[in-house]
Length: 441
Image (cartoon, rainbow, N blue to C red; front, side):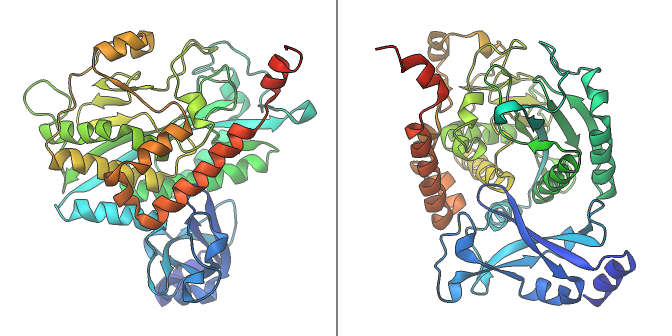
């Protein structure tokens, strides 16, 4: 501890940002002087448990206190906050790992893999919008000139945000991330940044660091960094695609057998589990009311939504829920609002169930599923993803495998809070309704 403190002090660090992630996937935390590093690593930084979304903790007694105990492997000075270093905390309550801490939920899932000598690696691809409020308080793209009907890879809009994007790149590289590429995505004001894949827990920690940096850098430029799934009705939404592979040491367990397929038998069984539990997984991968404005097949301004609605897999098929690639698969259901720890933990549980039961994912689909009618989908024996948050929550509640992975406390809190969200949405009277019905009858 003394060596770590001395190293941080030598780098000009005087304060720790002790950060954890709540149920909604939002970074929370507090500032702690570096002189109290020992306490952060042994007991943890203390918080009022009931003040944190999804804990279900009481207001009194020893279980009212939530401690974020620092993980030394995550210590990282923050370039945009001189003198401050982030340390990620695992949740502890009454001296024990807290079952409803999202990072602890993922630790439990990964421990199941480790028990078999396996390690999950993920590459998480965040898409996001840069927004401003326009006249009348309406949200609009931060770049007023970003107006192409098909804006993917636009090299006119991209340079106009170069100041922000370059600052974000330099900041993330300074934090040890290997940034692979940045592009303009398929909606106005939408971008994607990819960084190198890694061990699953590390990937989630890196995504939270990315969000912290992007929020701060956008705010400094009078913009809002948004991971809302679908801010504009006529344009594609933001995904959070997961590239997934399983390893034993440096041997890929998903590497294809000699049968011409993308994945090994083990990989196909894992995918089969993901497809079998797809409706329940949807509640965690697409956890907001707005998420289901994205998970629909239909035309958008650019011609497509790029979001799956069909529970299917196929080689390099971006229209399916699972896109298979040599030695890995891309899970395309998650959107930008997903909690990465919970989505990953649920994915592991589903994949392991597929392996344990020896499930088969069914025939690979090579067709463009966005062109299929509901009758064609049914004729091929394929299911559809839930089309509302309420439907996804029902699926989650009925899925023992996924609920067991989350744990009883988090499952109950997630279902409770998300059902409240759905009810509030269902009772809301929108401008669309007023325009359509106010004078109609």
